[in-house]
Picture: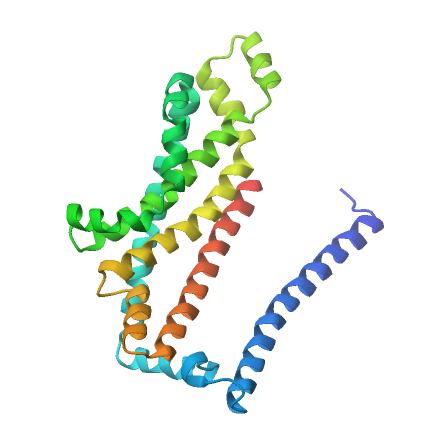
Length: 262
């Protein structure tokens, strides 16, 4: 099939625009780091409090030499992956049950709202007492933060499907399973993907909160330890590593979204 000249120009325009957007995104990071280092070199900012890109890089190299950096990154990524996977699977399953049974959904709806508004860090001491000061407590903490949001968002996306389409399928004697698989899930695809993107952030937040409380490994532990000994270079290095991990997780979900769209 021949592609028209106008369509070719349009595709080139879109590609050019995408390159410009990526260049602008990269430029923002480069300019931020350059200005930060300039202010540190000129003693305009206190490097003891604000650190500097060179100090962060030196800290990363030091952690690499002591073989600590990969250990802490692995622990945080592992905990985040487990909590993210559990929240996604359980969230979709529970949302399906709530959509399937309207009575159950109406019963548990206020409890979901209350749990969602409850600061999960307040449950930290109870979780530690129940599960111990170990990785289980961290995963449960992250799961509590991300699971409720997943259930609420996916359930709402199921309920927002056009009722007229559901009635149309019912008029053709479609079963509830057929309505769910052929209409509800495909119609909620974008909402589910958006929930997964949010889920990556919430899972990482929950893991770091858990590591603040009980962990002796992980990036959250590095940040907490750095703050206790007033090593701001270590604190900002931990935050920098979290930004990288968060970006990688986001782009993984973004890549999955593109593949599924195709």
